[in-house]
Amino acid sequence: MSTIDLVKLNVWLDVIFSTLWFVVVAVLAFHFVLGWVTGRAQKKWLKHQWPEHDWAPPPAPKIMHAQHMTMMLILGFTGMYIRFPFFTGGRVAMRYIHYFAMTVVTINLIWRFWYAFYSKQRDWREFAIGRKDAESFLGVAMYYAYLSNKKPHVAKYNVMQKGSYIFFALLMILQAFTGFALLTFNIPILHVTPRFLLVGWWLGAFLGSVDLAGWYARTAHYIINWLFIVLTTVHVYLSASEDVPCTLDFFGLKKLPVNPDAFGHGHHAPEPETNVAPVLTEAE
Amino acid sequence: MTFGKTARLRLMALASALIVVLAPRLAAAQRYDLDFTLPTAGKSGCLVCHGDPNLVRLKGSSTVSFWVSEKVIGGSAHAKVPCTGCHLDFAYKSPHGQTDWRRSAKLSCKNCHSQEFDTYAKGVHSISVEPGQKLDVRQNQKPLCGDCHGAHDIARLTDDPKTANVDEGAIGKAKLHADGYAVCGNCHQDYWKSYSDYYHGSAYKRGAPDAPACWQCHGAHEIYPSTDKRSMTAQVNLVDTCGQCHASIGQNSEQYVSYAGLVHRRRQELDANPVYAFIQEASKAVTGFFGSIRDLFT
Image (tube, rainbow over all chains, first blue to last red; front, side, top):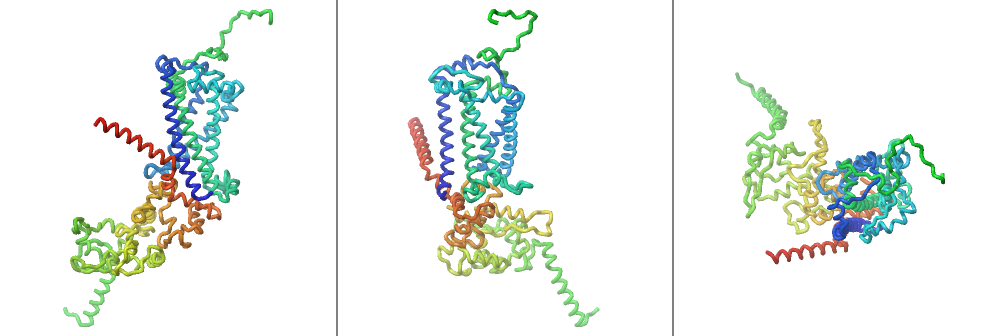
């Protein structure tokens, strides 16, 4: 890649992503206005007709979410500072804060995967996209586009939520990978750098330089950072505009009213036992 | 009691020896005592006048200060060098005559720092005329030692063994590292402004201790244009220059042109970016539109 290409690539990334973010904010603002025009916002904000829930999230993911959100904000802020230093004297501190938050987020990520697949709760099914989810995609998209007032309900999360959460998880893994690939200290015993271990030996061999491989890792890290910013902006907007009670519950600010029969998924409270024997029908 | 000629001579020899041995020590112990008796050997005589913050001259419409802070020079690397060590053309009369004293002082460093001066004399900043000679415009713009390094406040870059508890060398190096604008940017405004890439220039200007100062890539005394193969920024030398920090850059310097291209060209590329240019124009148009509406009502 020639000189000008690499310079241009970076400038284009800055321009395109910052412009994209403003466009997304403008679209969301327009979407919010449409909510009032169509009357959907009045139902929620004035008549308090928020979506019903047959199940409230347990404490562990809520705590994890709050902590994760804090760390991601820190990572975004410090990461942007490292690329665009906007005050004097913060580089060393910002780097170490970034490393600290990175460590917490990585531990969080590992813990969340364990929680999803190996814990007693193992909630991975809540995020899995099945056939019914796929079939509901058009309906969900039409609801968000104000082309329909009915949002198809298949499970706890709709198909677009599931898709974005899975995408978040993939981005997290990629971001951790590209982030660790930027580190150039020597790992004790192994005597190689994390950069060499992750990208140097293969991408570096392909490009002819371990440092150049690190450059591409940094570029990918920056792109993923912007994807996080854009997706999180949409996530925050939808959390606030679609379901404030659930958002408040998620941050422990107000308990979410739960109706176990809301969707007929069988999240009933266990019925009190009686001594009366069940009446058998003829079919049984 | 009378002394013989031999005894007088002995006494005089003893007194002379004592003066030779003790005078520098006394001078060091009382460096800045006011002392009208020495015209050349110490600072104290000069500081009688130049130690006064109010010592100024009116030149045209501006006031020029001739104050030398005793505290500043006392804390500099040259605290023990007498004023006349640098002000070689000092004349003990007031005012000190019409000598080219600035140029003399700024070039006097070569008397002690000959190695640095030799390398400076090879580079693009060198001038081949002596103080007092007439310089053409281009030569006149070239920096002398003092133009980059300053004058009375030059910091020590090595530790003074006598002040073991103070990390003077590190403090001096940090000060010098942070002085990029004063050293280079003051003359090379365009390059200073364009030094705004993400991880070198922008970080350096925001005080990052690990971001390179100008001379870490371009050299300090032996500076050549990047078209000259002796230049640190010539393509053939980029592996070594960038390799000072980027150890695993590989041996293909062409790849490093990509890095080097970023260092001074980001702002230029940003201004040339069509989307950025469109946004700039659009924001100007929007601002202008609202400005004209506001003007209607005011």
